Length: 636
Image 1 (cartoon, helix red, strand yellow):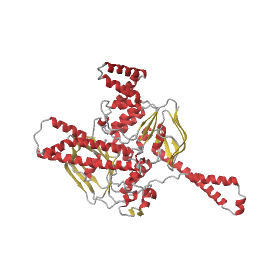
Image 2 (cartoon, one colour):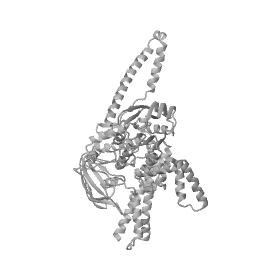
Image 3 (cartoon, one colour):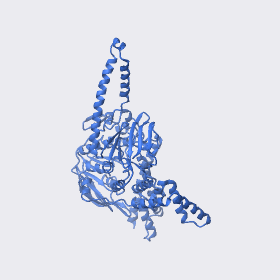
């Protein structure tokens, strides 16, 4: 049975053709992965199905009685709603009635309250609402959700689980997932894979995570230049071969067409006598061929970038011995010792918030360990890819961000003009002069990569480099990293990416313990290793610091030598850090939304500037908190 049918649907964004007379049928129990380059129209197609957007032409048909639900790309707000209420909002009107009934039943004391309870009870029974409550309880139990906690008490991964529970309560015939693995660590991704395996309806999802695609999908929908192509399977290597064969056949057809067009153009330009006797039908056919050729959307080239390695570093790159770093009651890194040598390729593996980025900053001398020593080797030239993209000036265009006074870029293949160099990263001369604030998330990532690879280095440090990249660009990045002769440190939750580019892992095992393993993710997993799932409680260090501070107040302590003013500042810092961390998480979620860069430029600029400003404030507060804690311990 068909759930959704797209009949000759067209959609345009300005002059860009997103859908060109598309026909698509989604049947019950389908498991479809929607792939395509950044900006191809994947999120726009989702919005058409949800009725948020309307097609410019054609019809979107939803079968009678069929319902759709979505798990959006952006994270839900960390607010005061409790988990049960959010799940019940999947059936919004009836869920509110149930919420009001339960709230009133705990406080009812007057005749008026009792009458309202009777009214709410009658409404619930008329709509079979008690069954809805039973379903909500069953979903919460199945998903292991903490129903009494508020959304503000949960990390991003757990809030996403709550939103899945909300979607499942509506019992949709089609579940739409837009980049569902965003903001999730590996245990949460594996959990989501298990839930989708048991889902009784159809699923259509967008992802750049190839391991997730292969696990969940049964077919792949390739959205390419406004057209849809369906691949029967989900293995990535087979998908690549199928796509290359299709493109090869298309290029052959285009070559034959262009040859015929050239012959007809030659004929139309013959002498006066030929033009007097020319066949008018043939002239009309030529005009039609010209129109067809002008309407053809030429395929965009692949990203193709090279990395220029500098002189070799010393054999010892980083020597870290017995280093520790943490907050008052949380060990982020506890007595870790490692030796990184030239040519090592190391992946950092762990749940969100475990300390991967902190370890990178320690090794790069951006933070100082609270104990232990870190020594960097000689001749070290580091290129650092920051997941917050802090190295870009949003007001400057792409060229100015990259040039830094240069007109030519020295690469391993010789000197290149900056516009020629940027063409390898799929930037046309016009797009290269666009302010960074107006770029999409994927384009911004490509600017970062272009800047990263424009300078010689012998050590690459990549913190979540795969975010927002389409699969083809991601594959090209992998190929270049495998050819890189220097030392590599990379943080990623992309299992395929780790398999393809690293030769060893630092696994964060919890409580500050870090273990070293030879091989990529699949080898680590095959040996029976697993990451401990994210704790339901708040994992951010600021929350834990705030709780620890509360306990300190409740217990008698010996007097300290800190002044009253400094002690007051120290007592207030955990709460300030908590607010800033929530703000950073909220802003990061907003900027990760696929439609964020399509909004008003002024809004995009202000939001990104606010994110950078808030992150800087957070770093300052954390550093200040640690400084005052050290002062207090020293004066004890």
